[in-house]
Structure formats: C-alpha cells, structure tokens
Image (cartoon, rainbow, N blue to C red; front, side, top):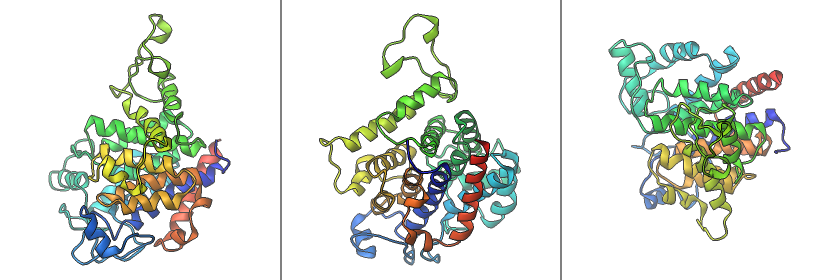
Length: 361
C-alpha cells in the first residue's frame, strides 16, 4: 500500500490527468514520428504550442484540450453535488458545453471535438432527443478521460464507482466492450487511489471484488483462473459485462513491464507495441504499461506517453491519472503544475474533491 495520503493520491490522479492532457496539446496526433521529431525535437519535455494547421492551432502551451474541458466540467459537478449526479452532469453539458460547439470536428473549446461528443450534440441539439438516446458507437477513450474524476470521487466505494462510470459512459458511448474496458480502467484507478499499486496482484484484487458483487463483471473461474468447482459456493457470478477480461489485462501488462525478458526501449515505443490509434484496445494497455513501468516516476510515465505519438493525448491523460495516483500530487514535478493554465483553480477543485472523499471515511 502507498505511504502517501488519500488526499494526495486523489489530487495526484486528477492533476496528473490535466497535466497529461496539456502536455500533449502541441504534439498531438502525429502518426509520422519523423515529422513529430522534426517539429518538436527528439524529446518533448514540457508544454508546447500547437503548430499552425494542427488540431489545436491557436491554443497556447499549458492550455487544455476539449478533453481537459470536459474533465473539469465533470469535476465541478462532482464537487458541487458531492458525488456523481447524472442530471446535474447532463444539465452542465446542455448549458455550459453544447452551446460552445457546432457538431463539426474543428470547433469549440480545445480546438477539436471528438466523435462521440459530435454525435451526442447532433442528436441532442438538432434532433431534440433526450439524454439516454444520444449515444453512439465510438470505440475511443473519450468517456474514460472525463470519468477519471468520477473514479477518483468514488474510489473508496467500488460498487458506486462502477455504477457511476457505466452510467456516465453510456450517455455518449454504447459499445459494450468500450463500456466494460472504461469501467475496468476506472476500477484500476480507484484501486490506486485507495493506496494499492499497479502490479501483478491488481487483477486478483479486482476479481475478488467481482466475486463479492462489487464489480459488475461475469466470472466463472475460481482463483487464479482455475476451473469452477461444482459446489454452490462457487456458482458463476453473472454481471453486467459478459467477461472479466478487461480486469485481467492490467496485471498481465504489469508483469510484462517488470519482466527482464521483455524489452520495450525506449518506453515511448509502447505506443508502437500496443498501437498508436485512438481505440480503447490500444490506449488502455499502453497506459497500463507506462504506469506499471514508472509507478514512482510521474514525469517519465507521462513524457513517454506524449513522445509515443499518435493519440498521445489520451495516452498521457490515462497514464498521467494512474501514475499520479501512485506518486500523489507531491510526486508530480512542480514545473508541470506551474505551467498548467488555471492550475490554482484546478488544485482547489481537486482539493475539495479529495476532502469530500476523506470526510466520508
């Protein structure tokens, strides 16, 4: 278990995600790594301005993308409502966000609007459909990026975490695999905020929560994936999600990160091993790898996420949240906090949320 405080870990996860988002603002979505190196040098080690003609053109170093905007919107709702309140979240989307976009990709806060958000905007604003009828089948980490805040807020109550994250995810994304992997990622993040590490034992801890009914995944096998016994005590656990595999991935990857026979050097090449595109099955494994490899080194984890190219913004948000939870806010370099736009406001929101968690015991 981590020696840092609960509040420090919670704030580390939140600021870790905001910083990861902003660090990737300039070098975002370069699939040609030679082009990335020509424009930003051999190693991006801080905040940078987006280049003309790129996705976030017009923004400045240290600012947030739209993912950061939505993470903050979610965080503000959680703080004011003292937990996840779906009606309040939807109200804020309708009132504070949708009027700022127009359903096209290159528009709105952060300079780019993601697929699931564009689809939700069109169904909500143009077709007048109610929330619950506006989601699409995007296979990306868009919901996970904002659900970081939900996972942190409900980290000490895994069942509430899983329910809130699942309900928030399906507002904009309906693919069953996406929802399962998003809930699994948030369950891992919650475990780290509790004070655990991302290691070979992570999946066993998560599966124990499946067996206890705290996490809504289907499971048939007994401990260590052994065949089920015939007695009623080991009857299959039927859950919302048909497979527990999304919970088993983190420990497999953590084991690989520590195996001397498996070499990914430099670590940013995890993006090449797991895939540079946007889909959840590329992004979550790469984030797990970097967090497991650098559990006590936020800077290395997030900068290797950024320098891996492709959808490095999502990778940096996710790896930043995981590693930030393990290092705590106290383990994040001060220069990253100082260079983040509105860092004082974000720190205050993170502090309020962490205090609410601690007060609940």
